[in-house]
Image 1 (cartoon, helix red, strand yellow):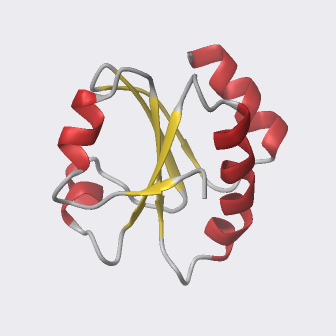
Image 2 (tube, helix red, strand yellow):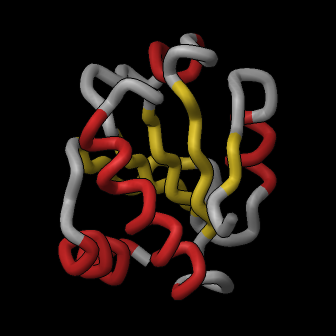
Length: 106
């Protein structure tokens, strides 16, 4: 697996201590669009291995962080750099759209 799970307890330290940008996928088991984007994020994690780290947080098991960041719909993708939010995308997106988005923001 090229993406990594994250939780309410280690979220802040992972985001703040990363030397490379982080893409956080807010998701849930029951979410169809989340299941669609999951394999795409795995492919992107491999292709951009040295440029970005992809973390996944299950909103049902970890309610504090999604609430803190105002997550209203899933999947929500938040791109962080140096501990700060760079951009956010909501919904399942095609791989090409995600790659363009990343290239614009990395």
